[in-house]
Image: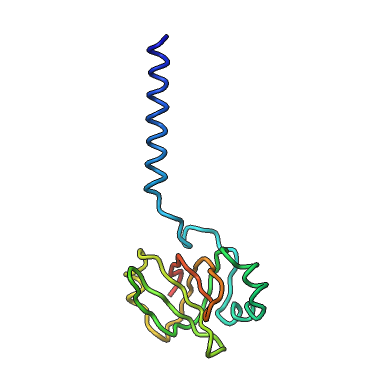
Length: 137
């Protein structure tokens, strides 16, 4: 009887250790792996943020697919940021791409038409999406 209990305890301990290791090494989900909640052009998304407070409540932490023309592609510490033009010269849509997109991001340039997907982080100076992916170039 004691051997059975010991065996059960050991098996449960190994299962718990395996689960803990899986959770510890699991990468956070990127936008490309998530279902799209909203799809916009850059100008449509800009119009949604005319009422910034309402838009933030509606879109915060939601997955958004946005299409537009690239204003700039810039490298940050580990990945790239892609900024899309809008009809407002003072506001861009900025998508911070995940590092796995670096090879694709290096091929992008200003003036390209692109569709990006990211998780909405709200609006600071620009409307920001993070954990982004390139959907279509």
